[in-house]
Image (cartoon, rainbow, N blue to C red; front, side, top):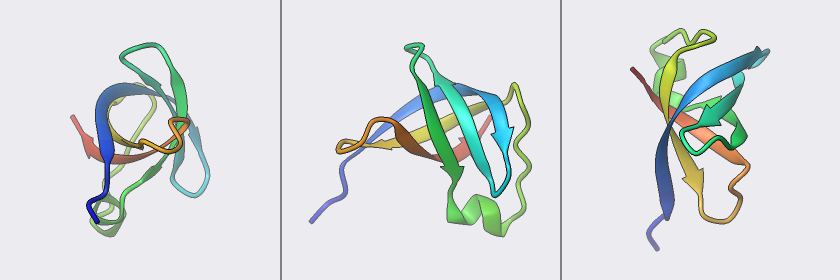
Length: 70
């Protein structure tokens, strides 16, 4: 079964412990996001104001996973 995800761009608004972030998407929604495994594995730093690509599940649109930092 394929995983259905929605990819959107957004800006990091707030940084929390344990690699958790508040991201404002391009459509002005604010979601909670965590860092994907490969980004955590390679120690990629994400700071407030960075533009990121987020994967959203079709089941819960308030949570996401950061997959790329621009």
